[in-house]
Amino acid sequence: MATSFNNGNSLFDFVVRDGNGVKGLADLGLSAVPDRYIQPAEERIEKQKAISGHMLAAPIDLSKLDGPSHEQVVAEIAGAAEALGFFQVVNHGVPVELLESLKDAAHKFFCQTPEKKAVYRGPPVKYGTSFVPEKEKALEWKDYISMAYTSDADALQYWPMECKEVALEYLNATAKMVRKIVEILIWKLGVTVLDDSIMNGLVASKMVNMNFYPTCPNPELTVGVGRHSDMGTLTVLLQDGIGGLYVKLEEDIADAGKKGEWVEIPPIPGALVINVGDTLQIVSNGRYKSAEHRVRTSSNESRVSIPVFTTPKPSETIGPLPQVVETDGVARYRQVVFQEYMNNFFGNPHEGKKSLDFAKP
Image (tube, rainbow, N blue to C red; front, side, top):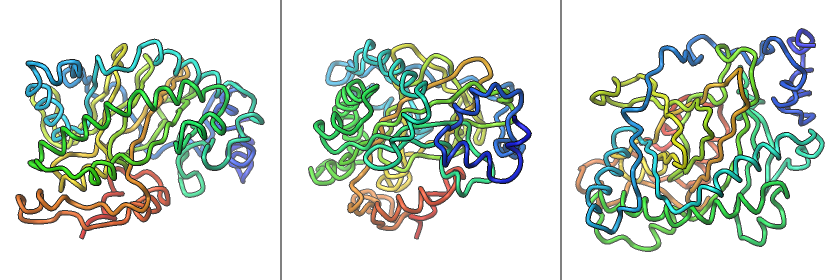
C-alpha cells in the first residue's frame, strides 16, 4: 500500500482532499513513511544530538505574583522572554483535572472516522493536516483542528461535540493568565502608562488548536511540525507526557547550550508552556524573542498537544511601541496591519522565523 502512495496525487488526495489525514495513513499499518513525508537531511531532528532542556525547564510559580516574591517572578518571566522566548509555568490557576480531560478529548476527536472529522473544513472550525500542504515540499506528520473563538455561545454551537466544553473551559481559564503575563512583559519594557486599548489590541483574538501526532514508522526521517515561530502575542501550550518539543537557542545560555543549538522542552506534569510570538517581538522592538520551535515524531505512541493562540484583531496595526523606540533610538520593525501579517504567515511553508521579515523596514 505504501508504494502506491509514492507516485502521483494519490497520497495527497487520500490525506488532504479526502480528509483521512496522517491518522488515516498510520491506521494502514505502513512499515515506512511515504516519500512525501521524508524531510531534507538538514530539517530532520536527531534526538541524540539535541540538548536536554532540564537546565531551562525550572518552572515559574505564578502563585507567587503579587506576593513577597513578586519582583523575582517578574524578572524570571521577562528574562525567559528575552533569552529564549519559552518558559513553563505551574500554579497557573488551570485545574490539573481539566488538563487531563483536554488530552483525553483530543484523542477522542482524532480517533473518530475520517468522515466525522472531515465535516470541519472551514471557519470557525478547521480540521486539517500538515501546515500548508499545497506548498510544502515535504509534509508534516501531524493532523490538527483549529477552533476560532468569537463567543462562548458560538463555541458551544460550532465546535466539535467531543471537545467543545473542555476546550472552551481551557481557553477561558488561561485568558486571565495570558493578560497578566503580557502586562508584565510590557511593563518591563519601561512602558509605565499602558493604554487599555494597547493591551486589548494585543490579546483581542483567541484560538484553541488540538494537534495530533500519530505513531510514525520512521521518526528519524520526518517532523511533526517544522521550524517556525508563532505569529501572535503569546501561546499557551499543554504538552502530554511523551515529549518532542524543541526550541532553538537565540543566544548562548550558561549551563544550557550555545546559540543555534536545539533544546528539548521536557514535559512537566501539571505545567503549561508559554511562548512568545512574533507580535510580541515586534511591539517590543526585538527585546523579546519569538521562539523558533519544532516537533519530533515518535514510533512508540501517538502524541497530542493543545495550544491556545492569543493574537491581535486582524484589523489591528502592530509595530514597535513608541516608548520603546524612543529608548532604543531606532525602530527595528515597521507598522503592519495584522491581517496582512497573517496572510503572509499562512501563505508560506514553515521556514524558521522568516515570517518576521515581512515586518522589517
